[in-house]
Length: 169
Image 1 (cartoon, rainbow, N blue to C red):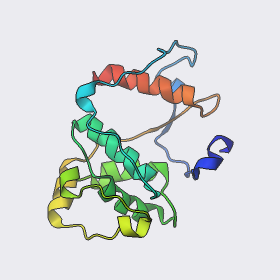
Image 2 (image 1 turned 45 degrees about the vertical axis):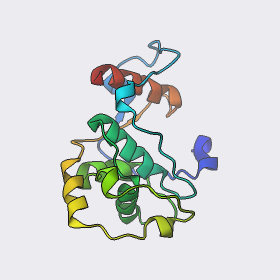
Image 3 (image 1 turned 180 degrees about the vertical axis):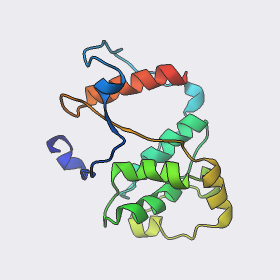
């Protein structure tokens, strides 16, 4: 947790879907490319949480949108992340994955991004049935959290992303 203390990250509880990277891929010593280049046709735009604590929702909407090749609403995802987490500020990382799987995330054009300077202003909207149905159509199938047997570091995450990128492309 020391690595993340300045970023406001909150450690989530254990879950049976938590996997060790080494259980999925094997040796932690495999060589990594120096650069990761995501396919340009999957990148719509860069997300920006502004002054809100919506980083988890921004990430979840981007990752699910990347897989579906469309822009998804971080604002929608954040509303449901906040319900799950119950935290005053932010949400647990796993909450973003839970929202993507259980509720889904609606298309960006149904609930567009807006510049705000507080979570309350960002969350001040009513979810309409059309957005809920659209979110249901955009659900992810499953999620896992990947940690390293020898520590939870960025090298483990980069290895996993590299492996997944090879499978997606």
